[in-house]
Image (cartoon, rainbow, N blue to C red; front, side, top):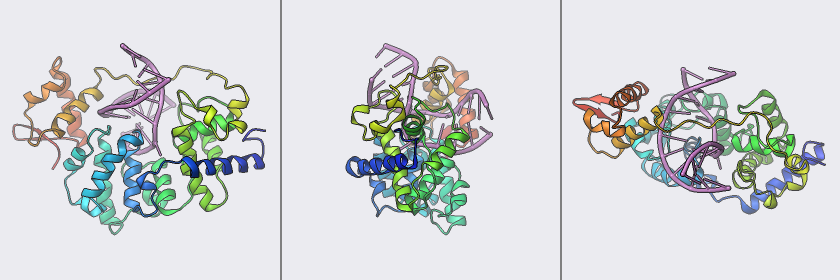
Length: 298
DNA sequence: AATCCGTGGTG
DNA sequence: TCACCAAGGAT
């Protein structure tokens, strides 16, 4: 009997994963019941496409420096980019700063509790809105991240990997997979993500340690290999992304603005590429032109 | 719908 | 070694 086959199997999946989570779930600081909604919010944005282990030290520094949305909103966006350190995708830092201003101007300086208000914040999409609603406010929205997608693909659908992009059918499956009880539903959101992060991993799943291997459809079917086209990795070497990253890193590490000639160090073999990336970064608000060079935004 | 946007660990 | 991948979002 697999996890998809009956309500009873679904209940067993919930109970087993929740018990496993109680036992071995990581003791992350933003899971502390005393953590503020702002702390939870920061952790969710920082964790978008970035492993938790790298997020934690930066999260601590941010909360110490900016304990509330108003504290961040009162500082400069450039400081947010600087404090972002090397988490990657630094526009998230900019969006965080922008969203702090929205919280001050429209939500009395608080992280909004309403799901639609969360979704309207810059840098907040379906995943983050649901996660903050559930983890910060106990509103049992269906949280669907890459971990949940993979766990459901395997345990319920019996496939090694989910589709390249989230489908409507997957969303329906995730909603149908939620426990009815409110507290269980919120715990399930965290627990199913954790199972995907620690055990039901993409490349080398630890099925021998998995608490639900005995009812996993993929396992019961003999762990069939992914059929279909190979999944496309992202190009990196020599891309604008790499060069932009180097430019922002140079500015992050400099207390003062840098001259245009200093920034050629980001990609010495092609100054025209640097030029194009600088223009893009200015457009994005990640840097700004100043007298004689460029700086992080003030 | 497909592409762009960083960074670093890992199998 | 190097392609893959990570608590996605915006356009």
